[in-house]
Image (tube, rainbow, N blue to C red; front, side, top):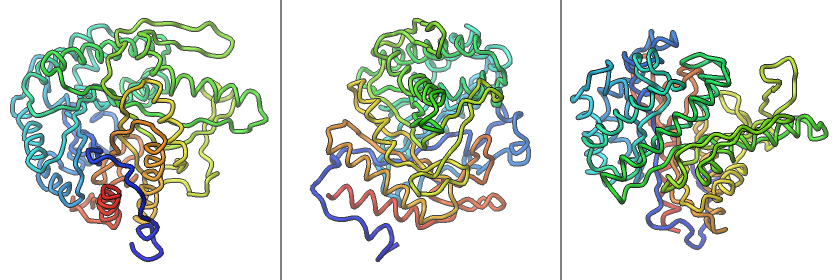
Length: 427
């Protein structure tokens, strides 16, 4: 990609990215390696046909070596809880040793590991007996965290949960992910328990390492009315923006989670998370347009419109780089360092992937110049993986995976990310 391509548009500027800026990639254990003991394994027929997915659990050394080629200095990965505790009263020391070896390899490469303790999946026994809306979930999850944190070494950056609101939306409101419920009351109970688990995990980690950096990864989106002239669409946009982007920020500031819907009284739930963040992880992908439709679930219809002219992704999402600055400004209210823990595009087109990265990194650079404290950018993801309800063909990876042979195939997008890191680090 030279000449008139993406690479050729990078120009020399004064330095904006600090020397310790985290340039990374993000992954999820289950999406790469699967697990016979996870609740998701029985949820999707694709997993019965491809139980090992990319077989990363066996090929992890080969995959980690790709990080050296990219030139990243940070790597986010998750622990697959169901491998650590395949049964309720079991503890798999070999699985713990496996993840410890990943940490050790990263350290040997000079790459900072960021460990996610929970990335959507649960052990089968947990979902069957202690789903998140049951108080027993707190005891089981914190027990897992306490023991795991005691055994793992070499980790400074921790994410307790990936996208807790997505857990709620999929598992408790839409019913399209485990545990497959549609119950608003149980959704709120589950969220309270997840917040409680974060607070306890934060304390567990800091009791062992006072210098640890602990957060969550929160999925943030930009919302817009489907029709600007429609007052119902504008109300929906305002409601969604408060719930999805601001309520969690407020909860970490005040210790109170507030749910507000139009024409109803606000629901306030005390949660033990006030001040229990050392940085804030932001996952950002897209803008969503909302329309009031009484014939849809919860009266809301979602749509992605290609208003910026960048095209929609393989899974129909709008590419909206300017929105990244908007959500980072929202998150900056916390007065904490911000790390973009996920940002990526589903496409088969390597040039589009490179364009996407450059446009979003340009936004990060602008935010840094405008005083927003952004400490890192993690592209999603290293290699093609299982993308939940989207299956195997979303193609977010910097490296392509042939799911018949499991061969990892370099793409120009990987080379471009390596170039982007090098060029911005030297500005």
